[in-house]
Length: 322
Image 1: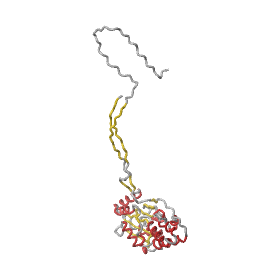
Image 2: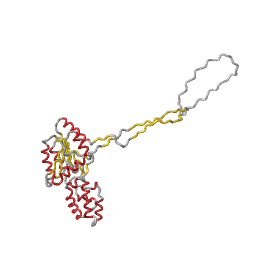
Image 3: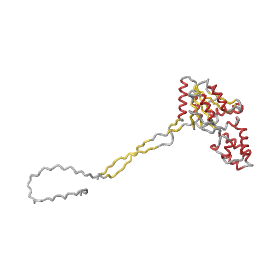
């Protein structure tokens, strides 16, 4: 048996939670690359964005209006319904007010109709546009496009009569490039203009002022218009609440969940930790016979001794022999 002292190197694999780097969705990176290439070729690249439901999340505006309605008209007469509305979460806000209220358990037609009137008087006004918040990652992506050479076009279904000042103010305050060279805001001239028809007419105008690299909208009907108008552009449907009677998407339209950068996992780190361990290790027995010792030189001095007859050692039995 032999005793060995040795060092054991312990390998500890550590995966860190915080990300070391991040990257946008592949379609967004592709658009950025196309913008840079087009700008270098002096093709005047252009990217078109919808505002409501794409760059700006207007659910906070709807939430604000409904809470005001509950406080003004339901607090005393219908306290239970008022409480449900005050506690409504953003995820429960639907495209239509009626669907939102039914989703939180309010089915009274009188309450729903009054809420829709209250909402309609406020939703399309400058004063309430300030309650919108940017879609996560949108500001950074638009600013990156702009700094890469793209002209930014905000093509929105908002109308100039009621929402021009509030739209410009909101975009500017949230950090979107607006009102400067290389940007353009296009709005409906009147509230009565139908959105898809309005955007269809504008595509004819935009086609003459540069290369449309990409378009973004949360309405399937609008993104279909862009798909037909700009055959080589990347048309992206942003996945947000939209009208219930939306048509099916045309082919070659990419759907996008977020403008945010996707965190990349940190590479696995290998840490070597020395440990001093004393261990008794038994040398395993082998079936091989030991090498015979070298013969000693014969002693020539005569010695008188009795003759000793050595008995032969008993032969070890083979346990596997029959």
